[in-house]
Image (cartoon, rainbow, N blue to C red):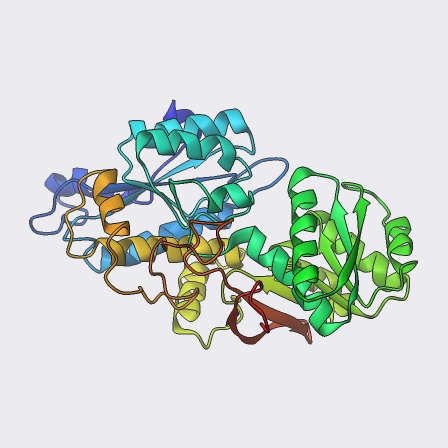
Length: 398
């Protein structure tokens, strides 16, 4: 079954080289190397609704860098990829394939189908490390999940909090009619409440040709801040409609809704928008890890999308390599054991230092999150500029 969904691994060329060694070509295996360590990334790499091919590239370049440095204990990492096609049936098959293929961990996935993937991983005893959290709370609650960020909930709570802090107490939340956007709007309302503001939520249609009616409805409330919780495709049209209606006030949104390509498409209409991210923005190349990520990605594909979903997956692979350094990797249990006994927080650079699942957790509603923190950026001159450091959007005085 896996051949139908998952194509070549990140080590396909290396494996071919090993087979050809006896014919006078190809790289040699590291001295004393054992079988490769298999990991899997499950994502909607390609679908009509949502596609993240850049996540695969991010995993591939991270794996290559680790393998070029000797791998883990002299063993190469082999990255397996399974496209769930935005389909829950395909996603559940991908999760079963992870067990069938002998993957010791699922790393850095980006999919709305976590609700069907995680129960299978729980049953198989396979950890999901550094999921992007795009499917909402489930990725921050499952015993199989080991997120390295606060995911979509953290970002959405942060948008509500910052709408009040930057604009004022009267906030309008524009939430799409799909389930994820509805939940996102509810989380933004929590952030508004934490900041002692009041919010009005307006439901907007999916994939409308014209959002002028939604913009007009928002402006009847005289908002001091507007939160956008829709799909990335609709976010651009909604911002344009608000600007055309004359609104020049505070707009906040999660960074995943307005990636660099959307910032470019919006032009002057994007100016001043505040974006909340789960990771350091990819424009912050003063951070060594971000610079390394951008360099590796552009070297692999000059046209690749550089954004935080890829950065999350890239960071997850690096965390895995650091976590298992000097350890015997012998199936998923060895990874779970390492995740349960982290002696000191692991510095990753792109996210807060990772100390593993905490007991008690910082936020009981999201018990798998080690640090419930987010980071703020603002679009200035068409470029995303980081504003300060990570902060907890639920903390008093944040």
